[in-house]
Length: 324
Ligand SMILES: Cc1cc2nc3c(=O)[nH]c(=O)nc-3n(C[C@H](O)[C@H](O)[C@H](O)COP(=O)(O)O)c2cc1C
Image (cartoon, rainbow, N blue to C red; front, side):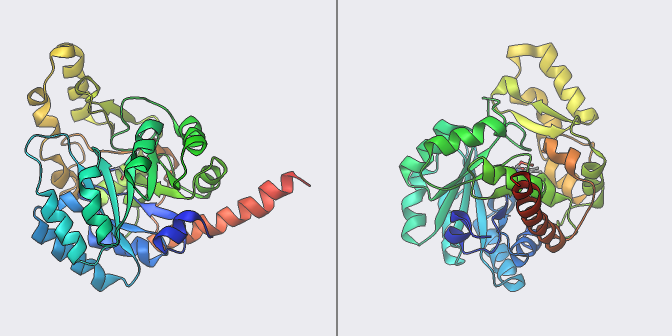
């Protein structure tokens, strides 16, 4: 399938694996890219720019196909060494960066001078337009359904994607709630040029996370996610568990007085314990409503091939068939 996104990134299929903390290691990025999609290493999961450089080198050993790096610009005072991470990206020969979080404007000149294409992930039309204005090459439009940080507007993709299509000139992919061929064909119909998936790629054979995490996603239904940290304007969609219920209890009790310190036990340092050790109830971790559509743990090749062949059948048979 050829779209503006496959052309922009030089990939076979319009399917991107979004950056995911403690999930987006070289193994997953390489598996997605080898299957014809765009795999992405999560920059900040690597503790230093030097570690990121090593992870990029490891990924180059596992694939000859294009892959990218996610750089998440966090809303914190002691910012990570972003210029150092960008040096690792450029020196590692990476040509695609997925930015997320805060406005990436100050880092764009360096990336673009090195020939890096930038896709910015955002959760609203106004932020997408801003990304277009500052010179991003594409955007990933992340709807209210998404795992991770859906922002504070709560607009689901059925509205957000066609609104983005009305306003944007640069290509965009649909992100949030995407799982299969139905998602891809719907996203294309709504004006997107492809799709970005997070949660779906965790439940794959190559995702280098503990089996408990994959099983928890397969077991979950679309009713099993919760929104946490809304009072802190840092809303995150997570899989429900006892730690999430405890955190929500604190939010209800403390109301507007709540601070990050009040919930530190449920949120700090959780990812390695969940993703590596498999302690899925130890704290809050991102997961999309799309868990309700995830029923198996295929390889990335099986998943992407299935999506592309089912999409073709959906378009040629079901949709064209409706017109006859
Ligand atoms: C476990 C997990 C960790 C994530 N970590 C990040 C991250 O570090 N940076 C980022 O930009 N997005 C992160 N995301 C968001 C994904 O890249 C993607 O936008 C989102 O999962 C799409 O929604 P879906 O889960 O419904 O597919 C994360 C998502 C999950 C599920």
